[in-house]
Structure formats: C-alpha cells, structure tokens
Length: 83
Image (cartoon, rainbow, N blue to C red; front, side, top):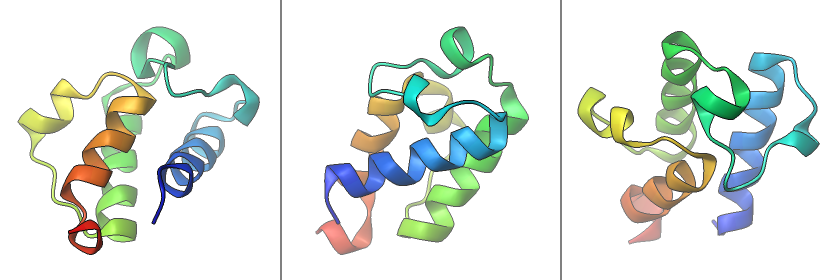
C-alpha cells in the first residue's frame, strides 16, 4: 500500500460521492471548504477507509481530518498492513 494507492481510493470515492471531477481533488483539498462535503459525506469516506484498509477512526479523530492529505496520512499511520 503506497501513499498514491490511498490517495487514489480517497479521490475516486469523493469524486463518486460528491459527483465532481477527480481532477479537482488534490492532497491539499479541504473537505468542507473546497468540496462542500457535509458530515454524512465524510462519514461514508471514513467507512470506506475502514472497510478498505482496516483502520479504525473515532469521531474525534475524523473531526481532526480536514484535508485529503490528512486522511491519507491517517490511513498510512494506522492501517494494520502498514506496520
């Protein structure tokens, strides 16, 4: 699992979920400010990451993740297969 793998999954999930062009999504893209994602959109992203990578993310942790790059960092730091 590479950083690019995780980024690609997050980007494709957000593009589908929010019906936007994947090209708009970069590591520095902020969920709420740039993508106008709401809490339900972010909840489904967390579910996708938990299902795909086996990470566990509390509501408090999810609330701290404001950008795509931060989500990638979280997965890379917490995925069981990365350790």
